[in-house]
Length: 399
Ligand SMILES: *Cc1c(COP(=O)(O)O)cnc(C)c1O
Image (tube, rainbow, N blue to C red; front, side, top):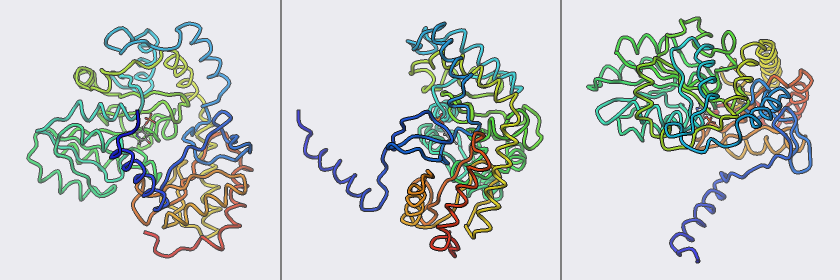
């Protein structure tokens, strides 16, 4: 059967439009495990674009944990969690995560996108109000829209703007939603201020810790620990298992009563096959490494400082980030692409992040560091950046 012509024309127009704007995205296919060095198109590249912050995605102990787990529990879950897909391994992981964070309960989800969709769609409805940071992850924005609640975005990390909006809302149940660490900027949300506002206005604070768990705080417990707050200070936190944990999946952590209600209502947790139990078992091992191997976080922090100092000395425009996400602002999509391609020629892989992922005029390189990078790896990146600096650094007025 051939494609109806209206659809064929539409599909061609989408691709033509994206191509003309320099915004076409393509798979860049790996032929090796994720890591500080990856094989792509027959070449080994020094890789600065994964979210495998602790370098666990290809860890030998996790590989053997997965092999053993598959031998014990099989491959797929075979059903949704509330029918017959929920295994002891899921309970064991949820309990271990709850113990790590000091919360009452953890619910598992298929991935972070689904968890965010589930939290916002499940908690909020037509009579409620959701307030989100403008730079929150797309999954939170989509969840807010799916909820049908009145949905507003406040200026990035701007607590005065948030306060004014909270002040005006007639809704009785309010949600304030923020990334803990912002995925494209790398900065940390003003958590103590957000908490204070949420308390004053009786709003529920939801924090997406996708880039914070494993990376920030004692034992990698995220933003709450980073700011020295009590374990139960933030009522609801979302974490992914596909970034610092190096595996796949996600979870929501919080009070038993709230999560019990969420479990009944979050459609992305109900109408979907449960996480493979073998991945849950593997993640138990990953959690042990996240908790115990503090050297990974310390080494990462040293790499961050080394990279920032080097880039600033060369005249690049960095952002206010102390996390392993280190964007280099370049302005236009063309310039970001040019620098990324020049690095690729030097066997270094850094993603160019362009609109619509970031606002127009703020295209950037998004450099990410992992605990498996060495000082020499960072120096190799700095050498390559130094060669490109005369042509591309020292931009005025990028924003
Ligand atoms: C990556 C990410 C997600 C989605 O998590 P996945 O497990 O990859 O689906 C959600 N929120 C933020 C802030 C993220 O960066």
